[in-house]
Figure 1: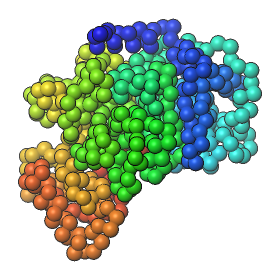
Figure 2 (figure 1 turned 30 degrees about the horizontal axis):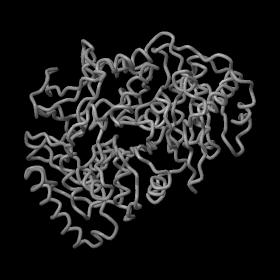
Figure 3 (figure 1 turned 30 degrees about the vertical axis):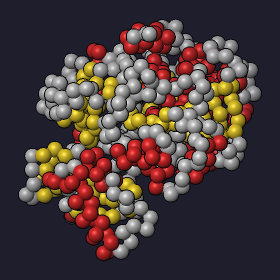
Figure 4 (figure 1 turned 90 degrees about the vertical axis):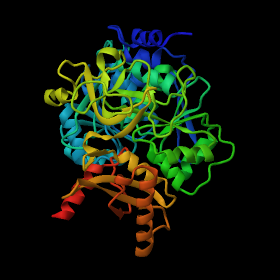
Length: 540
């Protein structure tokens, strides 16, 4: 059996060399008749797109972009849903050696303008129902998909009428494939250049973390406007040459169950928000699901959701961890060669090609087993670590690396036990400091979510004269729960007791607020900093 080091070396040989051509690596080298994507509509009708069709159509689209003045290293943004046109556009961009700038379809006009202006975008490709959001992105040519565009727009179909581009660009492993803006919790979003050689890391996760096999029906439900969806619903399957499902619709619990059933999905991955929504929907899973692997990433996965999956789906959900800046580096891997016992609450162990450590809070020294500290990647011992810095942001880049560039600081807090399992605690800025205790929100939230009346929960630290900070909880009850003031008082008391008994007596929330929803990023991550801002405003 090939060793992990040999496996990683083989990936780097394939993707990190000066002759690397993105179009070849992602499309042209695969058998023309193999299916690359199955595009599923809300009525469950579907369209298969083969690698041969992608080669032809993306070559035509690339020629059309070139006619608009797009060349190597030029930025081309997409404001599109999950569709055949999206995949054709992406491969056309990369065939030219241009750089893709993803835009999430939930973005408002200012967020779109910030990302396109900040990247020097030449062309924006937008679905017709998104066209009205481009009012502030005035310096870009616009290609519209379907419908009627504004004056001066170019129709997507018109670009496909060009003769196919003869030669695909050679960018090398260091060539920029994508420029993806981090969502961030404070300050302006930062542009993360994703090089071609990052494909080695993306493929590793698909093969080792997700155990994506040739006979799998693979569905990553994350949106490709964000890293997890783009990297692992689009890029990784293309790199391997495997089929991937794309649902051309927003999330709906009933529709999700129907897709899993109708298409016989065997390997499914999504954010914790999706799994919680499926659990809270009240809809029973269809009989006869063929699921072999279920995976999660983006936010810590509470143990109660894993318990639900084991009971209702017949298998647990494996939690994984990564960032826009590195892809996935830690996980409860599915592949038999590195699969280990699942420990609910843990995000798993470091994946091949990455060395992930927990550093002490006050020094770049590896913490003792079980000690909470700063999660960091050892760049000197992580051959698949591809991130080197943000575009045009040297100061922000310096903040993320140690002075000797050995350590990349993730900004997360966790503990690593003697067996190498990492357990997430919080973001650095989410840690609650109470009377000398460091309390991670995830521990408290996991206890709160164990209550059958709770749909979602988030905790923050609120200023306290005596203790410095105390824990405050924001809870979304399940439908029909906590409907009266008396019922809410009773539930609040039960939740405080639950935290005391399931986590720690000192960490119970001193106040419990019931809300209709929690503030989240468009990708579904809870924005605790927004809750802190709201709490501060309420105190004024």
